[in-house]
Amino acid sequence: MASVTAASTSTRSRPCPMALAIKPVTGFSQGRSNLSFTIRPSPARLRFSCLAQPKTVERVCGIVKKQLSLGDAETLTAATKFTELGADSLDTVEIVMGLEEEFGITLAEEKAQTIATIEQAADAIEELLKEKNDN
Image (cartoon, rainbow, N blue to C red; front, side, top):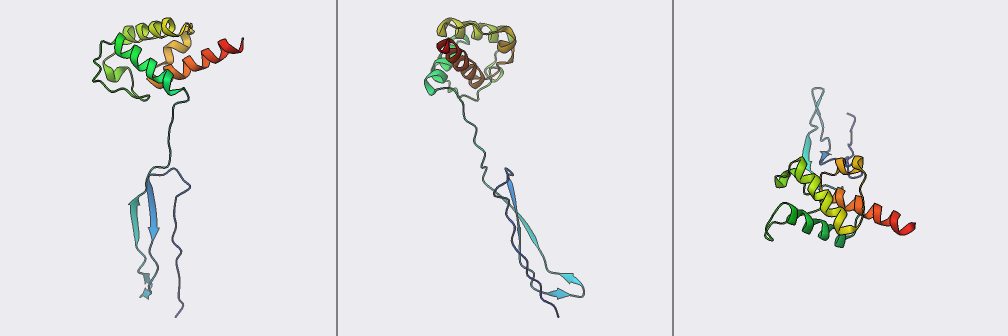
């Protein structure tokens, strides 16, 4: 009787939240194998981070809190969307105007319309400040 060995497979290099483990084959019975599969959760290996400086993110959070009249108890992160805070399109325009005033920059209308999170706002500000300092 022939013997078969199985190798275990891992998806560690893939950004997949699940991993597949193959248990070794123990023998054959009437043409069928005793191969079993187990799907187990794998920890996420992708991390997203804001490109902007933490100080810039903090200032943006302060402006957003001020424009939306949020209390100090409200916790904001870089991933916080303006819509999650109850902001409509007019509120978003006011936030962008507050950011322009605070940082002494002017955002292009096309760029301002794409800003939906604190991270996007902070990244756009950092980009404009870098261009301003390079000139």
